[in-house]
Length: 272
Length: 343
Image 1 (spheres, rainbow over the protein chains, first blue to last red):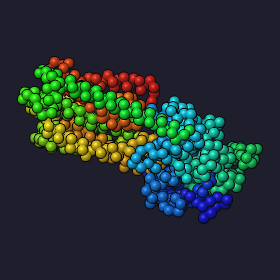
Image 2 (image 1 turned 90 degrees about the horizontal axis):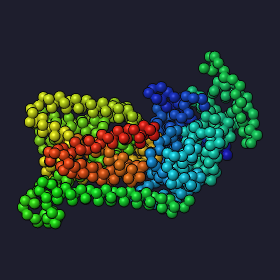
Image 3 (image 1 turned 180 degrees about the horizontal axis):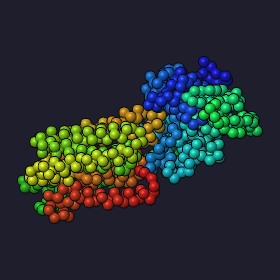
Image 4 (image 1 turned 60 degrees about the vertical axis):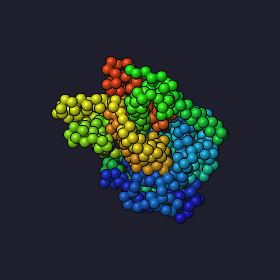
């Protein structure tokens, strides 16, 4: 399948259902990340978007359906082989005490490393990742001592050092101020443009999602209720259906993408 | 930034780690020199060397080869095993309290060994095997109760501490029920003692090491990824649950082997890892350095027990490691509390 203006599908959820202890959270999702695109998965809390991302990243097994990486079931490939193609930045990764930036970024090389440690390829990839994320100056600093924004750049640098063709991120900007949010999103756009990395990420901010992603998938109650270009997807009816929100839409003066202006939350049985 | 610059940073870290290990090993050698030459019967260094090379007088030969050297070698091996195991646990759980002597694994091994000796009347290889089974049982129980995997380090530690109390209660019961003479022998072993070390015990320990050490080196390749949390590790292509279980199993095996040979020598597993990480500046397990530090801690403590305390070679090494380890624990709790973080 070839998408609108995008390449072939890299990562595909096909009829995916997922559950925690029998409680179904993802209820039949078909969704594809196309080659070279940025896809944002949005939706209200508990709509299943982070769970779907965990499924796409093979962290969790779907109860029904399958996740395909380049057309083949992701669970049938050795996890290390998958890691050479697919990178992941979880919501709250743990930085060990006393680790330097360069060391942490170097850990991204794990899936590429053979028995001999520290090949030239590894060093080149780490250096390139530090440069691409603007963290080269921090290389010898301790991760503990960095600000939140710097730290998130360093984690992205680690994911970049992994040299993935597909990168998944779970709420990469949730704990950052607006300037650092833009900073991280521009960094991701840059990776997408320069390296052709296909990116799927869970975002909460609809306006930033609409501005930086080529496609949006809106989830509600475990299903994708709308998917496509921001201008097609962000409509008053979708916002009402997915978020129970009465909202108006404007055009962004910078990117021409839709901007959501909330009016009020619907109350009552129609939108619980 | 160039690849060369990245390589330079890495080389600098490596150099520091290697120098630290060499320094610790030099200290072990110094302790060994003192331990072999001094004591109730002083033997000049030249004669010790001659004895080690197969010569020397009969009396010197007996003292060096049958008393002092086995004691030294056993101490170094036990320390290395406990140091490695402690560093493994602390790194896997991201918590300095998660060492096998705090979370009941050595206590479990002790119970099983004491049951084997006092109740079943077993001797020889059966005792370390029983200790091993005891350690594994407690570790498995704690692991299952803590709700498996994840970053449930805190839960694991708390349940482990409870398991340690339970095991110690069982030990107390067994000791009060047994004959005085047997109970005394068990008690000395329970404090952790190197006296009466023989080449047989060392042989068993060396054989276990020959299996465990290379497997640990191979398995520890996934440790840096595991340190980043379950999800990040799996994102890097590490089968997190299996890798974690393998490393925990190896840690338990090392602990049980050491405990079976010398008793649960207090605090060695607990202190070696943090010291090793501090001197190497490493953020990861620093397993080799931890092994070296563990060897130094035990041999040095045994030397201190021999020379500083009245009672000579009857003072168990665990008295010294416990006495030195407790203030360290307090210091760690205080400084960690001030920083408000976890290691």
